[in-house]
Each structure stands twice: as structure tokens, then as C-alpha cells.
Amino acid sequence: MKKQAKNLPCITVCIITYNQEFYIGNCINSIINQRTYCDIEIIVGDDYSTDDTRKILIEYQNKYPQIIRLILHEQKVGAQNNYLAVHRAAKGLYVCHIDGDDLCRPNKL
Image (cartoon, rainbow, N blue to C red; front, side, top):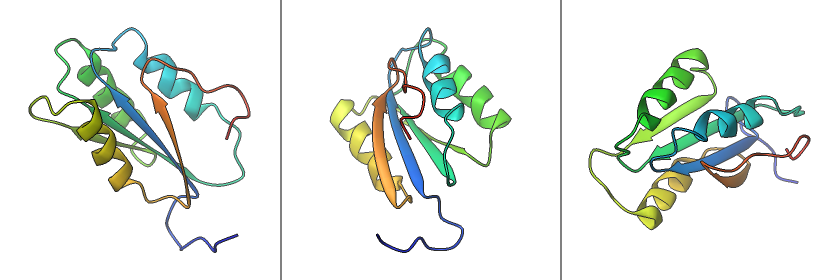
């Protein structure tokens, strides 16, 4: 196993979202509530949502600033470019992906 660099998370969870205001909170909660043996970071890429997704994301970032980082695109970039932007920003030793309308099963991480 690779050695983890100091001050870097062990696990990065990458989320992409677009207009998922009814799901994104549950998605993030399912990750925050994971029991892990190491530090995690959550990176969420919002593809210029036109509903309240962005507002919800900012509320979560304000509540968990040490864990959640946001990539808030200023124009629609498409699912592929959003995915690539989020994964390029990942700093964790391990990286996993989840869509904004999905849930992480307990003990997944």
C-alpha cells in the first residue's frame, strides 16, 4: 500500500451533480455518516444547476468546511467535463465516485 502524504486525505469522494436539489443532501449525508479509519474529503462538481442544488451545496460546505470542497461551474460544461474537473481535484490516496442522486451504503468506505 502507498504511504499517505501528511495533511492529505486518505479517501476522496467525487460527486457530480446537476439539478439534483431533492437528492444531493441525502447523498452528502450518506458519505459524511460513513465510519472510516482515515480522513476523507468530498469534492462536488455542480454543472451550473438552475434549481437550488448550488444553494444546498454551499450550506453543506459552510457546515463542513474541512471536508467539503466545491467546484461551481459558471456555465454548463457537460457531465464528462464536470466529472474530469472533480476527479482532477482529488487529493486522496483512494478515490471513489458517486452521482449526486445516489447514496453510499453504510460501511462502503
